[in-house]
Amino acid sequence: MKKPSDFKKQQRSHELFSLMNVGQATFRDLEILNIQTIEKLSQAHPDELYKRLQQLTGRSHDPCVWDVFSAIIHEARTGEKTPWYKWTAVRKKRQKAGTF
Image 1 (tube, one colour):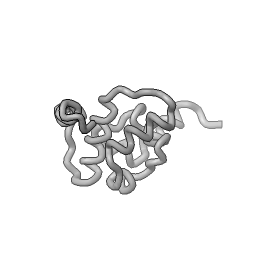
Image 2 (image 1 turned 120 degrees about the vertical axis):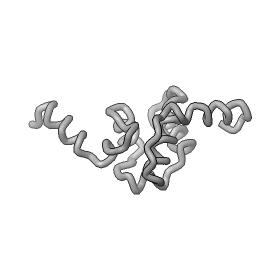
Image 3 (image 1 turned 90 degrees about the horizontal axis):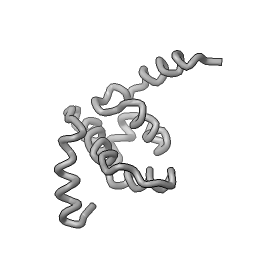
């Protein structure tokens, strides 16, 4: 049986943790969504992931989760690291326009 510290070391060595905005909570969300590689993440869309996560968990999630998904997808596609909160303005603009 693995010790909890071994499990954390194993998780930390996962490639998704190399992304700026992936911590334990986001990693768990990505596991739920069956996103296991940066390549697969690069093919995703934040709207789709956000909606699917809510469907799979059966609960609402903070809209900031969308911001994190946007940031990590952007990094997966371009290599550019941006703090998740830089995407908040994008989401709020879309909310105001009724497209989120």
